[in-house]
Image (cartoon, rainbow over all chains, first blue to last red; front, side):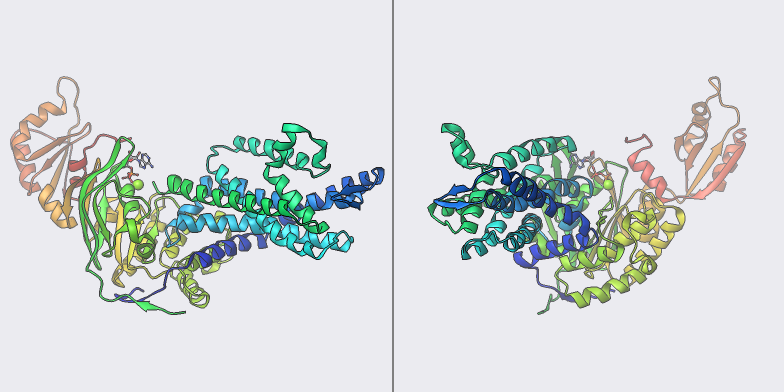
Length: 266
Length: 319
Ligand SMILES: Nc1ncnc2c1ncn2[C@@H]1O[C@H](COP(=O)(O)OP(=O)(O)O)[C@@H](O)[C@H]1O
Ligand SMILES: [Mg+2]
């Protein structure tokens, strides 16, 4: 079976290693595509019920000097929420299960893979899952005639960025969880972020410090970024959002790597 | 895909000097010297908590050492972890199979982690499924496998990269006798093929069957080292005589009988029998009868590794 000298394969580079972990997750989900569907449908339901349904009762909106129907205000928010929700699904419950019960990362660490590879690969998967929902959602917006500028195409990289930032930070948070009950805390954060990040009403509804607080929350940055891109109102504020999300993701990634070292390399 | 060859590597597969491992204040491995050479089947024999798994995890280059020095395949695990792990096969004490993948994909994806190209992994996987008799189960879910099958799958997985050094942490614990023998047979074939094996176990028969050389570990230290035969010669006698006496009560306990035979060899007094360690069992029996003792049962048997083990690590329960 083994000989004294035999070919040894050069170690995988970081990119190929991360992609392999994505391949693994893809192989798992190929059989469970229905689970995938539910994640996509939720924001769509919100768009139709709140955006279009409630939108009938609301007059058109002024956003950045542009008058748009309420549904078109809500839609980019749901685009960002798609990436946010999708990224959360994998980087919280699933990561916890793999880490604590399945010992999956221990298995991977018996191979040339490193904790950095695992951090990058798992975050990348969460990011891709989230942004795949956004892609579908963007197509829906296009079909409904809700895209107003060529910059809307940039909503794709924006969704990838939102997916990255949340996937990384949520995975980092998950490394501190000790039981399933701890996930209540995530749900407790998820709902207000979803409702109050200028998703259903403009930031001008808030005054003073409260407005300031909302402006520095990450989902708000994602929502306004997507809105600026689909409406074609790109400006300095868009750049701030991009830098914010990049930094958030990178910090999350670094924390995940260090936490995996602490938890697994004992 | 460029392949490169590793030239003649140092013959020392594992070289540890004063190796230590601490978890907080607790020291699980307290300074051990280990030398494993190419092609050898080497065993760590020891009771639960002896520090076998802690040692194996350091060798597997996933657990940083706390003291001493360690070289695996001539490399330093602290800096060359991925390169070392690329040439190791690891079968951990607890199965870490990927429960979300089927049997075949468990091997395939794992092989890909080593950077082995798709085509090569695919043919390797078929070969391994055959080797561990799981071809029929290729599409089965992991959770539907029996304990023995899971273990075989874990062993197949550890071979996917054609390792130079195979680490097996209690490979047969929890298996029924049939499954154990199947596994031994497979491990024996690997040994014949020249794979260096490192096995931990607390089964004496396993150590005797598989290991060319072993160390007895106890409380984080090495208590003895040698081939199974050497260990028996050094730490036990050729034969052991087991004497059973019918009536033993407070007035006439085993201890009193033992006093009368204590010159015959090293004694071990157990609740139901007395063991006499002496090279010639027949001679012991003759002397016992000469002294007017009348055991209801006598048994002369060859010393086993178990006698060595119990002598070195004691009979008291560890946990
Ligand atoms: N991660 C850990 N943290 C704390 N103690 C540990 C850890 N791993 C092992 N130990 C302790 O180290 C000792 C040796 O364990 P181990 O190496 O698993 O022994 P063995 O494999 O010989 O049964 C045990 O007392 C065990 O409780
Ligand atoms: Mg153990």
